[in-house]
Image: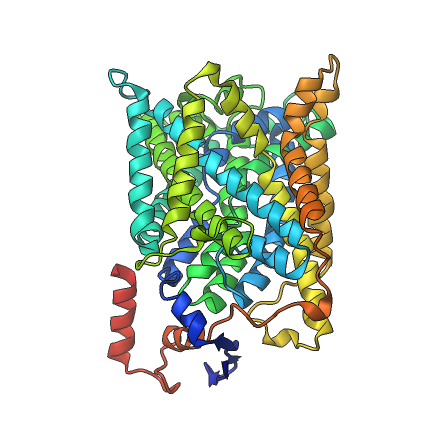
Length: 542
């Protein structure tokens, strides 16, 4: 076994020491084909920026304002946004140091409890596999907005074929698709905010709204605490998927640099895309508007459409339908990517059949991708039969996966930091250090558990039915069963501080990438200006 270390001066202030790389001839042969680090910095940055912009913002935000009022919606989204930022800081610290596919499932196994890793891995995989089916169903509904002469199932099949083609050839294809779709979503939100400000001030539309909607009967918080709590639930589901940045670290060309940069952007994108959007909607559309509740199901009266129409855009419904359509394709694309890498990680940790670890010559875990698409297809088929009862239960089964994942990440990060420090390692050697440890993790664990247990409070309001209570908490029940079954079956012990492995999974070649990104050659000397400019141009177009 060989161990290589190298220290390189990257700039005037930063010295980066590559993580040790441990290899043997046998392991090198076994891993002839492995995941390719084909995601560039621009891919990761755009995925981070646009990753959480989806139907939760475009459509469900109206439900949040209707239930919590304009002030309640702002407070709810701000607090959940803070929770998400804390989660991303914790995940960023671990993923930047050990950039592996299926990061948080693997980290839970490696630093906290193997049963926790088993549970969160399978719950997260099921969430995205069923999520693919949800997006296929949504695509079929959206296409009926324009074309009714063709069976809507055809559009779902076309979408599934597109998702398979994107994900079976190269991770760069996934990165490029997400890059441009995220760019479109960001552009739409920025335009919406600008138009919304113009409408609110009366510059467009001829009506001055100001803050009048904050002074309607009931004020800014018409439904009190329960109204704000309902917003917590809606906002938590809207932010679902933000953790995908941690998964992309395993295929990032330079995770030591791109992951911390992406994490630092989370705070600003929450303010820009969510808080400002919610504020604009609350200023212009009164919370008593009936269409706000309908907007989560009907794109023609979604909050974004309503604001654009007040600006005189008669074509707003068509534009937003198109945006939601590509958003659903993007969500399906992310679903196939995330779940396939999670399944790969589960197989690597011994929690799934070993053939799911096989990677083809393009660096794609082909069997994991195909299995995910197959399960997603089966779940979609259940929506076509039996009035969709089975499909409804499948979606409920995975409804809490995001929150469970966030809490697990924070628990794992506490153990990661404790083990790292107890082994005498310096925090300054980490590419990114999550601030305010352990207060952010404690906040996530407490707030996340409150939302997980409290989100079904309506099922305990008379008349109370057992089936309604079970269906509300079936996602939590699944997580408890998976954890308990693995703990009883395998009887793993909690990972002790001194047994934690902080070496495997870090790679020396990331140092080379850091040199290149900082305009340095292999020896750490500055590249000529024409080479730096040429490299920038190639990175933009390639």
